[in-house]
Image 1: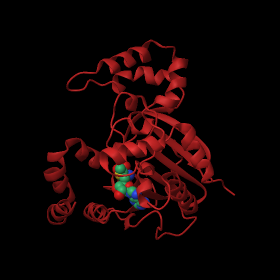
Image 2: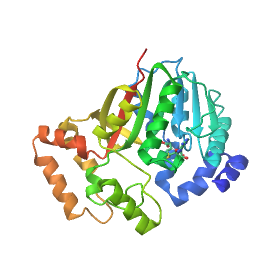
Image 3: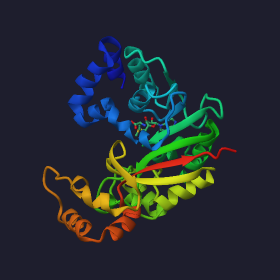
Image 4: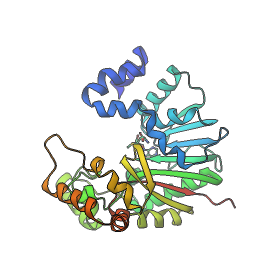
Length: 302
Ligand SMILES: C[S@@+](CC[C@H](N)C(=O)[O-])C[C@H]1O[C@@H](n2cnc3c(N)ncnc32)[C@H](O)[C@@H]1O
């Protein structure tokens, strides 16, 4: 990040992304530049006077994409060099209503009851690392309570995240622990696996929709809704109320998109099952198996 910021400072942030990120990870470079990443916004009644808090803003892609649609975006980011990159990006693009703040959600330098919308895109699952003295769920719950405080009464929350029991995990996709299958294990076994294999605790909890609902309710949120999304929550091209099987069948070619060395026999089998099963069965199972989720919730008006 230091090297990227050095180039961003002297030659511009686009040049930095092009010469460093795009060379090492072309898909990451698209992810940084792509405004379509904020297309989940159609789930909210966004208003020009809204103040938005982008929590864990990363490279600032969502903050910048949302800026032209609202009064103000605060991009809160705990990694100093990322916050610096966002600052350079908004300065160079002359975006005056985004403010990059280096800070931690655990103690944000922000006043309560201020925001109309808080976004957590790919963030909730990493929050367990913010405080190693508490168990992971407690850290996530405390920080969701913090978000609740920061929202105005009636304010909205958006979360983009993986589904704990996603079909992709059963097929061997890597979990946030950088190992396969850990999200599927009971938590103590996941801890044991990451300790033995990688030498660190398992701190990146994801949940099923039932688990997310319980966490959000405990944090005070209501009006909690779930959406399935394709191809990923960071590229929300198609989304629909979770539990509707028809979109999943229609987009099964996206879900099982051809890998360079072909699909495994297990993936091919699952694809056939998804396509052949009645839509109601696919819909029901997708609550548990859909890979990615968009979650919306609200702080009650009173
Ligand atoms: C996977 S990235 C997602 C970035 C961005 N939301 C996006 O969608 O492109 C998660 C980001 O959250 C930040 N983060 C993690 N814990 C945080 C905390 N407690 N407070 C603020 N930011 C945090 C990380 O530094 C990282 O940049």
